[in-house]
Length: 100
Image (cartoon, rainbow, N blue to C red; front, side, top):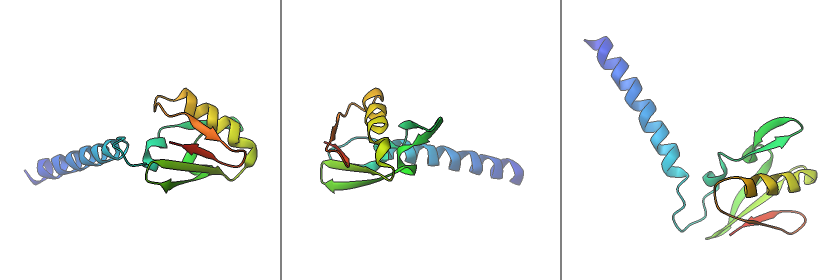
């Protein structure tokens, strides 16, 4: 009986963790960097999440800024965001991207 309870607890905890991730990506008025978690960029032949190749921060209440560590990746990041299904168009100022 304890074995069944432990298995059920593990499965329920995994379900709660997935639900937390899904809730974190919801767009609800305030800028949230977790919206970009599912967007990947082709970084020298490897699909890489934006958070692993750039600094993503909240500049204002409704503005996300993305500043890549490698400035040559600014255009590929912009194209990946435009191709994704998040529905936000980035603004490129030459050194960083702004998402409003």
